[in-house]
Length: 90
Image 1: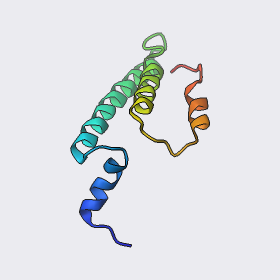
Image 2: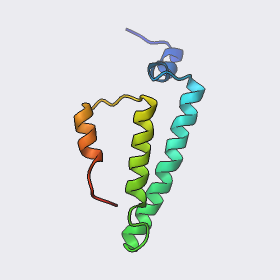
Image 3: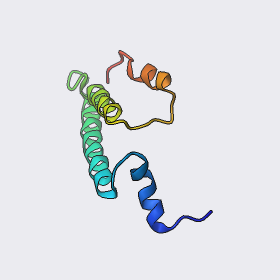
Image 4: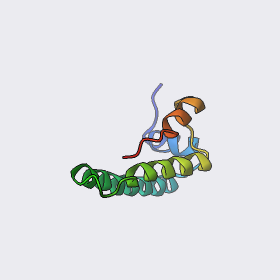
């Protein structure tokens, strides 16, 4: 089964109820937030007294936002919750 180029670009956004443009915006928003969390984690690795919970808090907030929006995960709901409910902070 061959997919057209258009289908390749719109199949996933359609599956989550978004247009290509909407999905692009949401994905870029998450990209920026992940980059900021990554920078905080990098600084925290060098200077452990800074940004003690910044990265883990950002990840938890993004996960909550994703699940509130109705995004689906390939993991079972229980497996995803078990990973997120960790008290470990980066």
